[in-house]
Image (cartoon, rainbow, N blue to C red; front, side, top):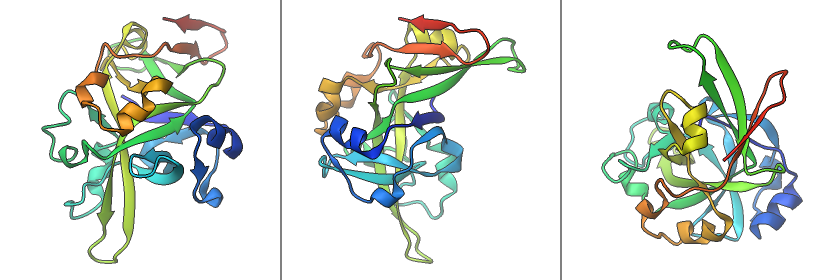
Length: 214
């Protein structure tokens, strides 16, 4: 699963990394803690225009939805069932890159999760990367408001993430830089399911410096 991420880089660094221009720089706000359940806007690159960085709301709202309530259930899309789920199947070929340089997960220390250890996970050196995402456009039939929304695609956890996310054992799909264009060009979605993975580094966020590398 992935409900908490970060994007702390400045605009120019993001533009240089992804060879794209931020469409509305006034919306671009680096953040150490992006909480999916805030349903805020975050930087993405969509397949229709990979040279532009846009801002979409986290929490995909399918075009057929009567209201926004579904977004709390669509922060993540499981790759194993994405083609069958009504919320996602119309967005399989609406691909996006969700820009980040870290995400957070909690390791349960007991069966009820009363004691948890927080980890930050990334690719090392605070480097930027892209989550595999899908997107949708929704129109509020009452107000006419248009919302562009996205979901992060998840897969079975690798060895590192199974140790950290030791309940659901899921992880977001982080694309290898050389595969970002393949995702946007609609390569078969199952090509990106586990065991597809990129090397990750996890750091325990407490008073004891400890890193995990797989």
